[in-house]
Length: 265
Image 1 (tube, rainbow, N blue to C red):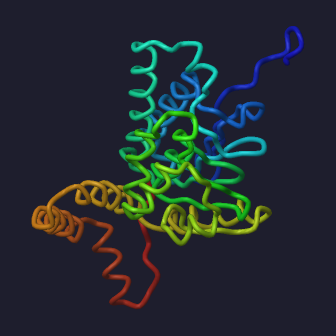
Image 2: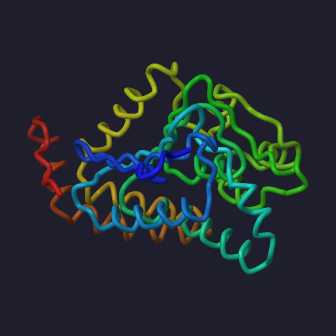
Image 3: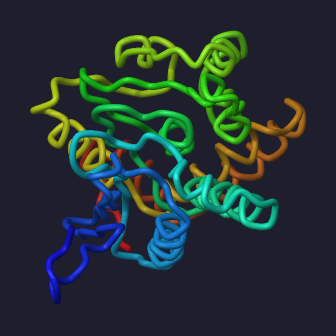
């Protein structure tokens, strides 16, 4: 509890350094449960980042002992009516879509538990690095609530049968299983989590920003298309890419056996 006149800590922290914007869910006493206020803060932050040319990569982290246990169930019980719940889940979906739609790649940095909408948040990020202590579950089924919205993101990361097993059983999977199944990219000891996430971010920052943004946009667009349409979109994308300045510089550097000099910004 805050003492009188003591400022209340922001529900979401943002720290920018070296082209990386780190957004930290900051409700450690609640294990960073996602409230309506948290969704509003995330949406505002992602909207601002999308237009910020200085930000090349986004990291999503959790304060305290966990990444995120999902929605704030106490808030949901206190507002158990259709208008509130429908708006809450719609705004949650909007945040998950914003993670995909902003031009910068988004990396989840996961420790502790990531359950229900917290697992959805990991799956909605473009990439994920997990500590060995991380555990994942779509656990709503254990409380009479099928994790429908988490199922959208999770089923687009791992195979259908594995996703449906998670959704039907609510069982936890450990970090190693999450890596094997494709929910995360890397698993490292907890004391190496910051360094591993930072190294992955830096490897992206070293690439031309415009091409990274183009690639992210193309990647998600083609995934939902028929294969013929995906190849049509790919042809148009790579043709335009090959004609732009970054490709000219990159190909010229390869031919001339030198390091490319990318335009920044």
